[in-house]
Image 1 (cartoon, rainbow, N blue to C red):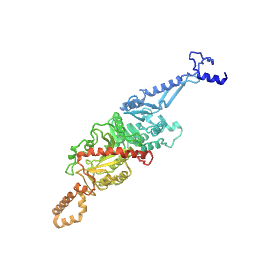
Image 2: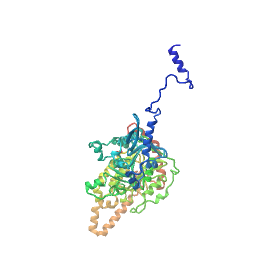
Image 3: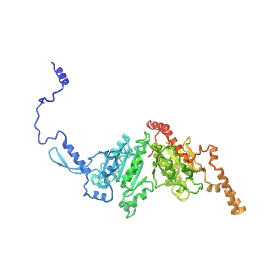
Image 4: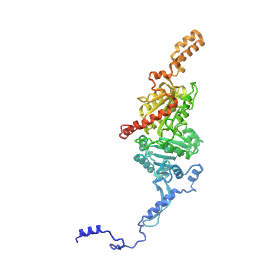
Length: 571
């Protein structure tokens, strides 16, 4: 038998497991040999992970953190994520002091983990990426971090197209003057990860953040750059620089974190979207917001099973809008009555209060909601209200959420405050956003639609998808003031000839005539409004629209986004 035949025979004949291995002699192990099972390396990893998972309770940073009433970073992760879903990335990243125990062996003596914990987990079964600051280590500053780890998670979220959640408590690896000594030089501030964050925002990859302590500098910026942000009312604050820096720069001394940038500041000016009572409340809001959103903008929004019939009649809506036009009504009651029971999630309720925006469901399908708030400025859009609606339009557009809009707008806000706060500037930005976003939008005109603001809201889609209630009224100007402008010469002449009483009588005649001609049925006769509907039927009507949108328009929209024909912009 030749050598080739022997090789084939050995290959085809299974080896005898009981035969001794006599092909080569075993050498005797040496004292400094490394274990064959790599138990030395695995042991080092286990030791470092154990140190990271069990903080030293005697360290000043940890003691102050707990005294402030804040959860430790890994306790936060445990509370936020589904049970046993946490998988860490960069688990042994940090600064290690090593002790050499042999020519090739060593063991860790001390370990300062990176002050940002990153990884994967699940929220109500949804896979997410996350990053969480550990304020107990160098207050989240750069000299306690390896920012490459954070950038890596931003890149993974973009590549894998899964949501990313950021628990901010510190500067998220932002600057510290001590790095000048550490590095031996002062650096021009880098902004790694900025391109990835903007790409995520515009790709419709949910970017959600929570202020669970002091969000400072870069940490504040990363939080505000999210699609949605929430602040813990008991421990949260946010600022560009802390009280000490402010005191030296602006001579505002003695400021507390809360006074400088607490919830009363930033949840009321729109920097942060929502307020929660505590950290647990923040976690629940993050879960709720994500439940309405797709993993990315090339996917359909999620749908859930419901037990609220889509054809449910709402007769209480017939009496919601008072016949006396000066009286207000509860707009939130209108929204919650029409959408699926318990599904309305309001965003930005503490700022831009002349408008109400949020998320909801119709027949289990995710939608965005926009409504004028008649209880604030009678629903007129001021600068903050315009900014708030502008942001929400982009939010819904980037996540493919059809918008249900309840319109009751007397126009843009007027007066000296409105002019000083650049109401028209922001009103025109809103106009541009209505006309550059393309997500399907359904209007229910519940009362007023006047002026440029009214036209922008109800005319922004072609063809129109809208109905009006019997309480609807519209025009270029409200009659209050409009009659004075349109008939000023006539009214002056009447007053000159017959006195104030004659002027008042003529004004009332004109008002009566206008009121009669403004009967919404006359508008429907001219097909200037497509349909006037019974308020009790509103839910069934908009639910049918939503079903049709999900079956026809949204699938085509997804194809256009996948192929690059449609590229909405959030940032």
